[in-house]
Length: 209
Image 1 (tube, one colour):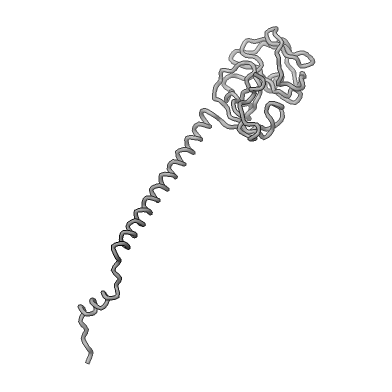
Image 2: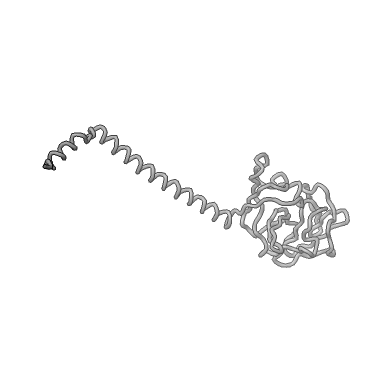
């Protein structure tokens, strides 16, 4: 004959094996859960802040301060191959300024020599005269006529700039009809700050001012 069991007795027996947490253990567990929730909240806040900073950096770099890396030697010794620079998004430039502009789906950097309406003359030795005034160009280490197929005196067209690289012997620029003068619509911005390499960090071209 099967012995009947009392459900209440079994429940009571099982209850004896259940460990009831102490008040300190309950407090510790609540503290752990609260800490975990605070950590997750802080983590979400940090990720959100990083995303906002990244988005802001992209916005600034594309709209206000574009960043570029120098490729080539046409701006030696002022700008060297591999250096990283920051531009200012302005289009009203003056002689002596370095600017970045688009040409034939490429981005170039040259130095503004003359503005709209100015008359430019370059002699066989590469000495430059603008509006009958000889230019002082300490940034040019080796003057030269370079790649030139235009006739002098040359008048800069309206809304355009005459620009040349600092390394006159290897720069293809406004002296050549291949590139010609730079229209204002082509200009990306003025070269402002060098951020790499670390030993050369600083405002670009300040040594010539």
